[in-house]
Length: 86
Image 1: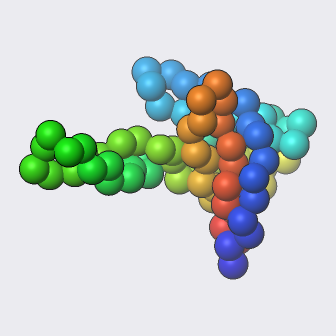
Image 2: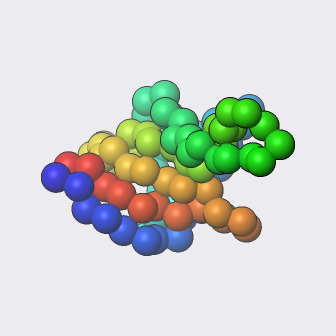
């Protein structure tokens, strides 16, 4: 089941890849390799669209050991959790 959200999160990166986040006041670590989410962007001067990184799908694990898969989109000045997969 997918739950759509729009929750701000604080995201930490190491070498450009998410490693931890805070969501709803709780700390989580990224416990599997994040999958980049990309979007095609048409550029009039180019013959093919370019791919723009808009976020990541990742498994996160809380301090209690419970894990969940989430989509986090990158926004100007921050990040937003947009989907939770059960």
